[in-house]
Length: 179
Ligand SMILES: [Zn+2]
Image 1 (tube, rainbow, N blue to C red):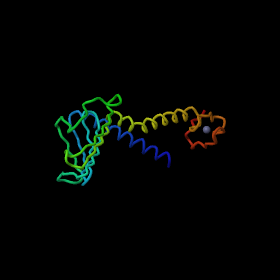
Image 2: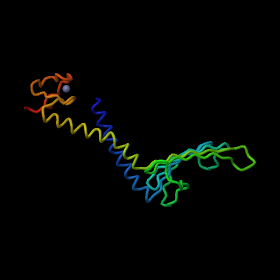
Image 3: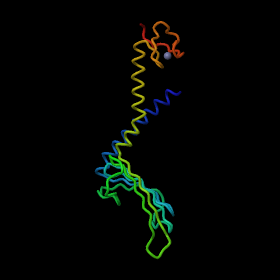
Image 4: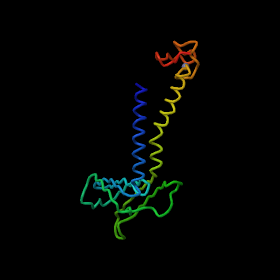
């Protein structure tokens, strides 16, 4: 059960990593924006120029967008509505911005905006981690099985093929090659 869960996680990790790499490439020719507008908030997730822009806006007078709900807006326009002109606070395309302000001089109403910017390469790397872990483990286990060693701890099982004297694991029949 734990083993099959690990396999499923690894497969999902590979799919997500490939998707992130595809989005990374796509982001240089297309800008994708998924946004959600509610009465008081605006959320958006944009993919542009190799990076992901996550934006949360809050406004005290409410949003004036005509459409409320979730929308996907792919665009071949190379300009993103707003992109920081300064470089990121970390190398490699990371950034963070926050703005607070008021609507005009004679009003009490304020707004705020938060943006977090991540490079697609970072998302691809995080997505790949379970798959990399899985392939390292799978390789190690197949090597141990070939050498007649315990799959869990690597102890030599040629003298005691029924049960590992080191960790107590009972090898599944057929996984230990004849010495
Ligand atoms: Zn063992």
